[in-house]
Image (cartoon, rainbow, N blue to C red; front, side, top):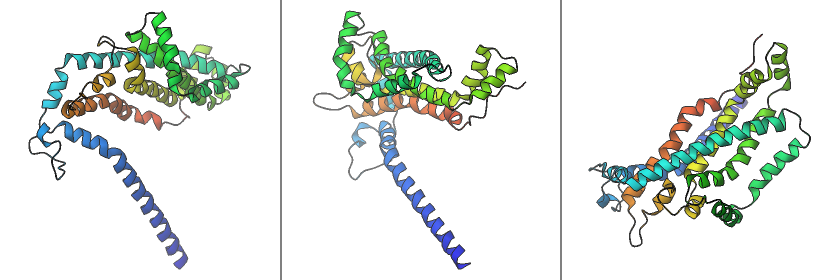
Length: 283
């Protein structure tokens, strides 16, 4: 009995330490976002009060009103949406058949190709800045949304292919064979077995492509110089003036830019918990 009580006490201690560590880590991660959100609702004169005040007695929506009335920011927000959704759609449309061909059709050298695809991401991105600039310039794609989509696909397409291929590998071949025995054609087998069972992995790859395109800054800064194609992260840079920083609009704009990332994760998180046992075709 004493040994069991001692073991329970050690388990409770480990659990308490684990929860304590996770609480500290979560606090460190959440603090900047919480401070950003609270500051975006404060009047400017309360940004640098001492001692530090978390809450304000004069909450205001003026910072958001100023941002949403700025046509340059609204245009950049629309550009970010168009670029991100296009990159996500094209990445999935191309990476799904590529991953299927490399993993399910038993192509010779398929594993080597996947390793090469993953290895391409080990290079530092700055070595691609000048070659991409030359290519986009030759095809007159500088200062265009199409040029940004092309640049982002060079990153998202290989990674999405590798992520989806990893998901496809976890699906037993026997399920496809059983579906064909039950009378399913190739297209129906792919749709109802492979794609349905790999839906969490596909959604994860899509979210990766969307988030990368939505928050990317360097490519957008280098390859766009006009508001016709500039994305929201670039416009945020202009809130940092030469002599002063417009913290109010900067915080409000940062909160607005965070929503298209936070909301999809909250809505689609249930897909990440789904097991791979779904999607079998009944006879």
